[in-house]
Image (cartoon, rainbow, N blue to C red):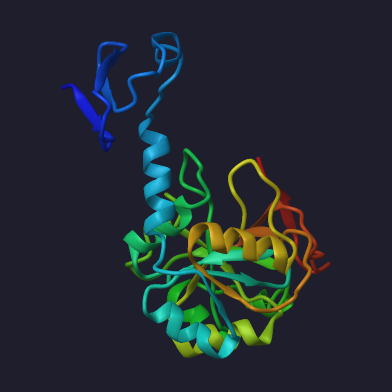
Length: 255
């Protein structure tokens, strides 16, 4: 099917139509454009259009938020840039599959970006099976990949039924998630192929570009969380980050 992009015709100019590659046409209002220029490069890619649409539809408006207003923002379906105890994160409420897809799609990755969830200590046992050693890690700079025990979170769980869980050492964040009473998606705040945001200035710039909320806090952060998978009774180290592994935890390297 031939698709047309119709531009507004300016008074006094006759439209010219040029065929590009045999599969699309662009109607031009400015007759003085040289044919040699037109034949060089007009590219419309589905990926580019989809990315622009995701960024435009991500959220209604960019806004700075205090922690006090974060639960209401998230409950209403808002997306958020926020500080953790490692890096700045990007997230939304984790129980809405479509919202999670759009939120994670902002990163611009061809594959589905890796995401975990932030919970409160009281939430943890409601959603996943919890190891006895959990207090050795939380709160702190760790992501524990634990067996999921409820349905409704398959869209962010691994194919083998595990869910990455975090309880960062940032009390205001945990309090906000507790008021929301729904796990919060967390993934690093960055575009695919770019370094994660570590400062409020970097985070605010991305929030403005995507039209999402940002926590108004001048936190400077660096370093990723340490990731361990617990497949009872075995522990596997998936990534060494800023969190030191407790000596009593016997773990295997990733195969």
